[in-house]
Image (cartoon, rainbow, N blue to C red; front, side, top):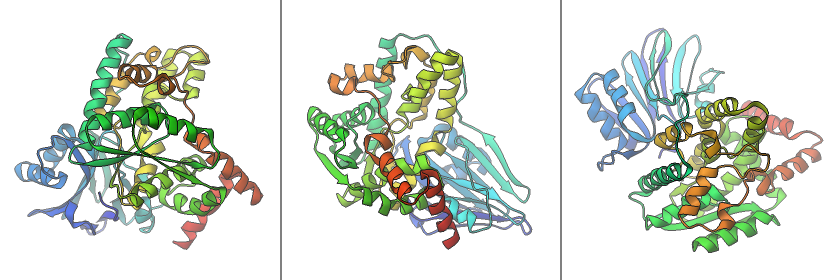
Length: 435
């Protein structure tokens, strides 16, 4: 995975297109184009790299046709850019796991692996590239074509037993593909349902699994994580931090996530520590449970909406959240891991699993009562796999609360006589001014 910036720029006046990247492993020159691929392919594996596979397709067919075929047929976390003399073609995986941004002004149209590269070109509105789309860039700007995207549809009738059986098979395949070729992986571990399922399935693939737990001192979730690790019979590293550590790392986190968003920052801080400790322990691959809450109804707000507005409204909200998952969560964590030279792989970030989850009836995810546990079908999977009730029946608690980060940020902001939102925004604006 590349930790360097990749940028493709098309000059609107001359039509010249240029692709720049320091990562030569993921770049190949063809007779009439330069191709850059960032990410990883899980299927078909075939032993070839992503850039080799797409380059071969480009040599066998028209570039636009080959790009569309690649996006339709390949499962993975990736983006690609094809720069020709007067045209750029780009694509992104259907879930949007691999970060890619685009924007334009009066003089240029450009794509880049981070927003800062576009800001430096004077492109103020650096937008997230839509997952599962192709972009065609010319002097006229951007034209997008949906190729492999999630579609909102009516739920398909299915029993809890059958849904859990199918989901377990999909998760086993997803984890197996994401650990293929590795001897060891780290798992971002809270001791909750999502990370426990990921850890259990990784262990089942017979790779060495190291659990990484981070938190502020004296948080009850740490004890729960230790108990869960013991039940899973997996080694656990526990790293505890102080409020001063939050204050010290926050500016870097805000810089990496490229947004003045207090919620993203509060989640980004513990994930920064997780990626840092993963790298320090010598692990190159980190598995995490991101996406499970959006796919299977893990948030209390879904229950509240179900109770107040009914089935159709909450289904649409869940669908919209999954479609926006790349912007709300994944890009933040991918950029943090990339900074630490750690490859983040997300078993729940599978297009097949997302399609399946979106077709499930709401009642297989949450019950229409205020105290429902949520993520019911995923809990059923965990039960069927033999995980203990201390894990399968453990209520969901957001990471920024369970780690104590949220309260720490409030205290830090209060010392500065401001709100958390204003404090994070001030850090962001300060970094923008410096750059």
